[in-house]
Image 1 (cartoon, helix red, strand yellow):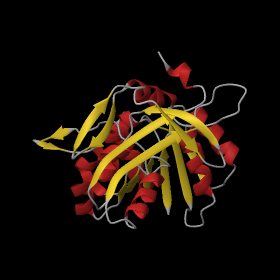
Image 2 (cartoon, one colour):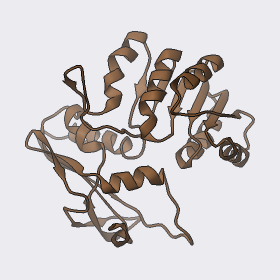
Image 3 (cartoon, rainbow, N blue to C red):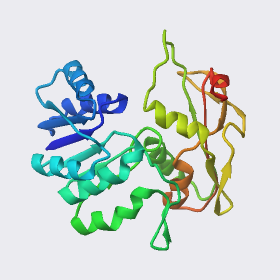
Image 4 (cartoon, rainbow, N blue to C red):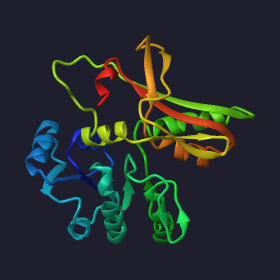
Length: 259
């Protein structure tokens, strides 16, 4: 299979390394507006499967031409969520499967219909073409949704689903595990949560809670409401009624977030 990855940042780096080891993948094209960055990632991974090319994720026509020319089976959207629509529409026009890790728009409306996130506007078109689109397929969102579903399947009733995200990183200088721009936007946005059958909004850095994180962290940490997709998607797809869903995040230096 041939895969094209749009975005050579922290996520694109990791994804490229994983796919380079997959026997099912014969070719990986890593594209970024900063082609030198893409080349650095390819050099670090050091796989004959990886090639690099310059591409602008905001230019849909350029993406369509690139996806079509290469005949790629899968488009991996590892760029900023701001460019989701361009990458999704280009994948559809090129007849490629699609995967991403985040949303840009919560509860958007189109033609009088409200969607949970913007990617779901394209669901019927992917089905019509016989293509797969796997959205929000990261750690969170993604893995935590699967974990919640497995737990819910063991229960008769569900009152509460809480997702707690916390990180302890030892580093000499600041490092971003994903897009720093997206991270800061999420910190500044109001956080959505689900309560008694409706979506509600909380101000950022409210809802302070001290939560114990078991081993390997084995620490108590403060977490706060944080803008994320899980409270949107879990109530809709978990398979049982749930009264309350929220997402809270924190780290030992969370006081530095206040701006």
